[in-house]
Amino acid sequence: MSLELELVADVRQALRSIERIVLECAFDSADDDWSEVERTFDCGEAYVSFSLCTDPGDIRPSVRIELGVQDESSRHPTAGFKAQWNREEGTFGQVQSILIDGKQCGAQRFLRRLEGTLALAGVSVLCD
Image: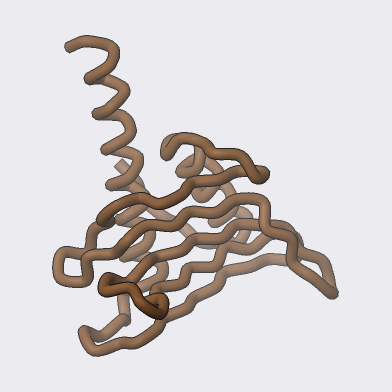
């Protein structure tokens, strides 16, 4: 297998792992007729927020994941993910953005940050 194909396979695997986290942590209780779902996990210093909604003018819903740090009075996002969401299959459609510290990054790096932040918040996830 060429290096390029291995990189594509790694990205696909990271996206599948993020999908599993979304399904396991955030939308396990979302009914088929939902209009918007939001779920947040936090500890004293970090948070992960999952949001599933349909933006005005969009046909497909989007999933957003925001990671950040917090103190007693405010939250400061440090990473974000946005993709279209296929409700029937529980999978991502087009990935629109993956950011860490305001810069585009790869799915693998975002997955590591997501897993680390969830662990800080006391949420256990199992990824292959």
